[in-house]
Length: 487
Image (cartoon, rainbow, N blue to C red; front, top):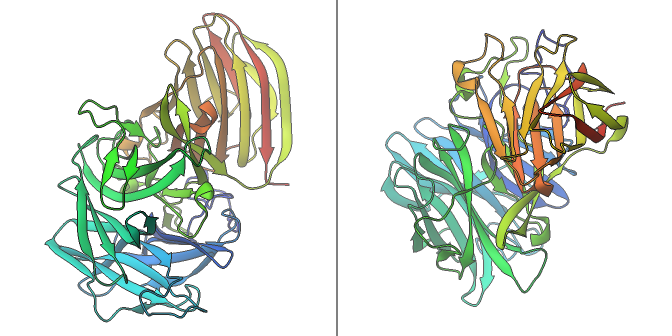
């Protein structure tokens, strides 16, 4: 959480309470997520000199709980001729690189060095827990002579084929994930490729590959590949698809290898991109953080003149696999701050617009259950004024199971590409049940016990009321609970 600043006519660009955002300047993709010595380290794409996407470096923050973040000095600074693009970090416990010792293992960062017309992979290391970094003198460690070879995610593989480092990166324009292995993080050998497959409308970026047990069963472990793509997401612009399959240490094979396999989406909102997971955690604690924005409009979003910044991260999410209609699907459970109940209401029957007896603080978790019975829809306004103008606008259709979030009414200072309606498909039927987090200018919705997720920026300050109306018959507000980390 961050220190507060004076309120503006609208809160967009203000520091959130429960999400990480830098104090100033531009931020995008999370990089080098690693857990080490009891701290979560979050590195991120960062412009140390301004609010625009330029001079890409690795910013740095750390936390003990994934909620309260301490911002640190820039870890890896851009250089003339090469920016520091996305990558990952690992703890080299076995000292395979020789950068540390068995008693004091080094943190190793593997990142894309991006020069005009050439992207290759480079290495840096830290022996003081990530505070200071030394660039490896033998860089680049992997060069394909490509202008679009980027975003290495490295992990330690242990299996029948042995134990070694694996890298997944992308040939972005070719829509291919390229897989390499190394014994020392310095010398890399090509293993296999994956793709093009699935969603291929935009360039591929920021891959990740990791195992998860289905419904916690250690005898049924699948591998999940995340692939972000810029253009082609269900809400428009950038988003993240995922594929469930197997990995034998060489090749990733999807469970459903048919050409007509349905594309699975990590998030149906517009503001969840480049998400990757932490290294250094037990597999049952697999945790993801993503950039909460969209390349369709990120460079044009309004910002505060007194504290210019663009960019924030999503809440951290614990990932698991669960069976849905006989197929494994990702479940996301948000890691939010500790909260206490602010207001609760239950057993309210609604027809025309009804103001519920709850109010929204700037940061809140909302638990909601609505029985629609024979109604054909329900509409909600969160954080509106007395005329129900502004605020977060949600609507639900029980026939299709689709929940929509409408941003077409936003203020004139927002770019036109921001003014869209996002649709979240759910399996809720005639009983809508969800958990939502709001935090100053963001909305994260988790339905179907976290299998269906929508993340969107909003342009309004939370606060004000919560109102509901039904369509085609009355609905019953079984329960609404508003809880907040604020006093």
